[in-house]
Length: 208
Image (cartoon, rainbow, N blue to C red; front, side, top):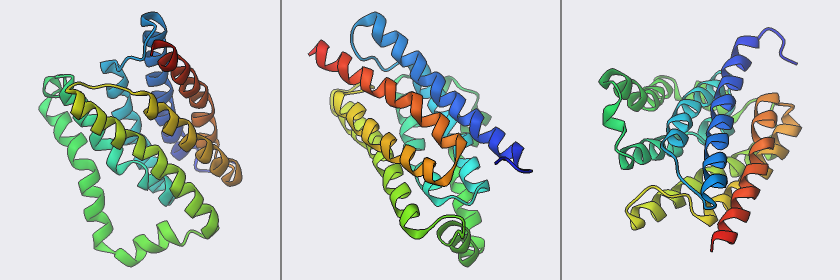
């Protein structure tokens, strides 16, 4: 399954490791507090995981993965700013993290046709499956759009109940997509997360 691209899968698994770690940190903190929390480390691990998964999706020529990282990437940064830790990071690291997606877009622009062929006309992914996977990634991204909107109104970084509901729906779609694609990175990365999403829904409802 991994063929000669073990190093690409290594990047993907590293990304999922960060994502799994963020859920573990958030879950433990919430269980202890008996309410859903939004730890700073959750957002730091999210940004690192997104950076690596973005790279993995590009190397795999998988538009569904790439598309799911753009918007949420900068929402992670926004939450770190709300936590007042973004400016505490080294300036060169902030510059690298902020600029990476922009550089990638510029890279796309050098050969638009090749980008379209690589991302939208991938022979390994049927069009219907690509659309389904993209919808799952969009749903997964919209949870952070909602989180950003909710937190902006509240004036602090929060993870509301609907965030976890959308997470569970999007995760289920991505797991289905990964099963058809036989993608171990997405499959292994998403399955444990679904359990955490469900548990946070239970904690949030009980706290109310």
